[in-house]
Image (cartoon, rainbow, N blue to C red; front, side):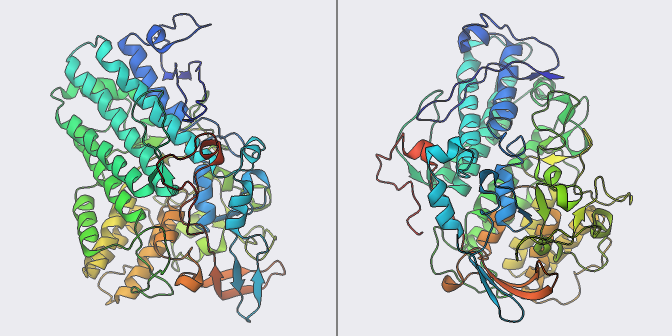
Length: 564
């Protein structure tokens, strides 16, 4: 396996990247004139189209422009989510990683109030400039860049399908490629709409516009494309041709473990269930479901979104009931020995956190560790206290990730830097779907059904802890187990900030938010167990200046979050 050379350009207004090469087992692409590449001259065969569609995702979407810290979409944009979700901390100056997750203030056990003199909102506004982007200091830039590059690559692939002669059952093969592009466009819009206050809908290759829409409309467009993918999959009549194309679209090094096999990718039905999980996620992470200080009835008085309703929870329940099963293949990533789209040592949050904490980019947060129940084998198999990293009041930690785990059979491993060993979940997973289903059940007063699903995830990851179902937990206690388990089992998957936001934890205490009962170790080594944290983070980010300045809004929709 190797990457072919890719040619790209940055659209001044649209921040889009065109890829003319991709991951391939064989160099099958007709390269035309390599000194003057064009899409029509270079992508004119079935193999070339498949290579292009593949590279539009793995190169344009995930390996493009993130080399300032780590080397992929899964190290930097996902790193911000894990930082703001207080799963990890950082002291590096690159890309504001040391400031983006710093709360406004904390109150220690003895009442001492430690105040951050450079709160997150001021940092975001100070460094959202084109000059800061050029210097590697604008955190708002990267997710926007990656996802619009992914979107435009898929737009281009879609525009090519009808003009290329396909073999076998040509209609089934064409629909497989279309479904691939629709799925990843849904993914891209979901990422934009879940993070930014407003965005652009661009569904024509190489185009741009200044008609900004609010994030909820971006999510609606994501849902449209996920549903289009499902409908298109339903129109495929040849399972053989489908699998032939899918095993070329998904590199062999990704078809391992939960990603498939050497000869098989996920089936049509499996893919439809992956879509249902993503549709459920789109609802869940873009609405409020406050659970502040153990109160299931908490409210947030000022937010850029609205609260979940019973109808929302029922929609989530229906989707997740038909979501990813334990035996399903999902979209995963692995590192090959050469030319990876992310590296084993720097391409993921897990890789940047694995090892002795004094030498890692990210440091395991004490607030993450406090979510493990006593006796959880995932804790004993993955973490040690061989070194205490001392920094400020929020980033000091006693814990380190053991590279590859301690070797306990059947227990989930959080991080490894061994090539090909770490399984990256790019999109949905069984654990996420089960916990979505668990939370929906709890919120609809099916508490025992929800707890049983929490137990199922813990068993799946080899936790070895006592069951919580059947123990008579109240809704508050059940949701506590749910929130703890989402943090423990979904570490490093880019969901932590969305969870903290929707539970109300990242909102200002003055508006009903905040996080309570936290463990904080001071740089002097004092362990506090009941710390109040006021994160007060911007809930949906401003549009990056690289877009907003060069392409100002003509729709009347703000590109700067007016709630901050």
